[in-house]
Image (tube, rainbow, N blue to C red; front, side, top):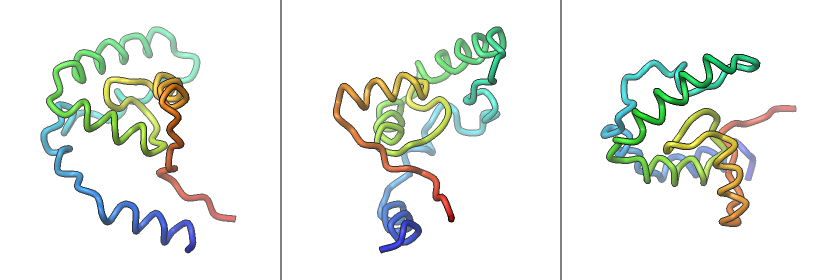
Length: 102
């Protein structure tokens, strides 16, 4: 099975309806991605995203998704770095959410 076939089969069987209840639904997606060498901007973004995610009714589902799949940005009230640590602690191998082509 090719990587593309695997990706399509993996995603087609999932229920993403939980995302409709997410506190971030409709939010500007820029807030979920940190800027390289922009400490002050990143601190403001983290405060805003932690506040938004902290009250989200589906933060557990979001974190489960983010741990299982190699997503970028802020998900489930965690940064990429925090999820990397969690994956190591929980022995989780993330499935990439992107495809590479040779």
